[in-house]
Image (tube, rainbow, N blue to C red):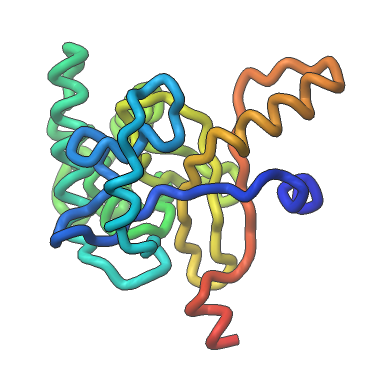
Length: 209
């Protein structure tokens, strides 16, 4: 995995920092995804010039992340005629409580604390719904879930995962995805699904090591 990643074109990321006090990753508000999804009209240059290059590994207003993620989910479900039940919304909110992937058992424990229906099928069905509609990604290496930063646009997930603090930064790079598709094509291999998980140390944990 690592040699492959090292020889790919440099991967861009979708910042989750602040721009005038708001989270810039929200696609509808800032059209950030146009930088990495060619099918979207691209008017990213002006925003990119002003955008601070902060990531989930940096200090930022995380309440904005949660607020925007929930608003985006509600809007997406409303536009697609999907039922975003209280249970599904609460599961999504719990996943977004931090940028650290959350396991199903942690969600079940929280539901139990809150006096909600904590039967495993209830939570698992909610997770299946959120995955199916691109609102969360499952990280196989951790058997845990992380909120998707651009659910409006279906895409393959790629992540930098700190092996010490477990925070995960989603990457959104068309070049990265296209490079892997091209390498697979040379082997006569057809890619159906792809999740790239890169383990290492975030800046803070590296400094403390």
